[in-house]
Image 1 (cartoon, helix red, strand yellow):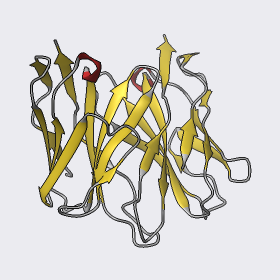
Image 2: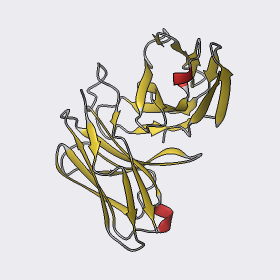
Image 3: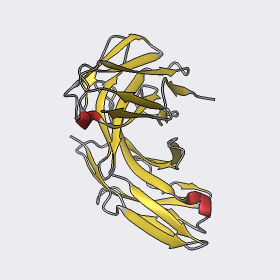
Image 4: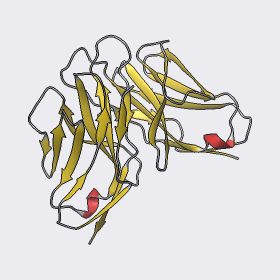
Length: 117
Length: 117
């Protein structure tokens, strides 16, 4: 079974600084997707960024980028120029890309990010 | 806009009651999921469904059942609510992947905070 581990329960960063959130996963599959979701106090889960396992190039979305290391099964999120609105719970998630059978979506434990003004 | 709607934002029920949590999506998604979210444990999958009348157990199905009679609706049932089922419940939906492509992410409802007293 696939598992996702976020080893940092809490992180904090000064506004305008850069912070990296860690995520590792375990799978025997070769094709899959990885995601970072953000959950602000409103509780609405928002997709931040996604990475296809077959792509070597790291995904970027404005101030958000990932460091995807497939062999190491590592998928970290870097937030540059942190803003107060980035404060939230961040979840790393794994989704398999098998055609037959169940396509589960598995989450990590979450990292609570605080932005200090 | 994709919409996943959960019937209640807050719910208080008594021990032993049968509880129904409803989720409706309007994007014609094949997959639907129910998670519970607890501090330090992240999102844990209770049940999911990849088609009408189809269901699969997730990681923590004990004490829960589900129903999917129509494609857009996925119900979570607590047969006899207990205090250890006090939690945040999140519903999500996604397209069924057909070996890669777009639309890989899941969309979430706003969550139901259930308290069992």
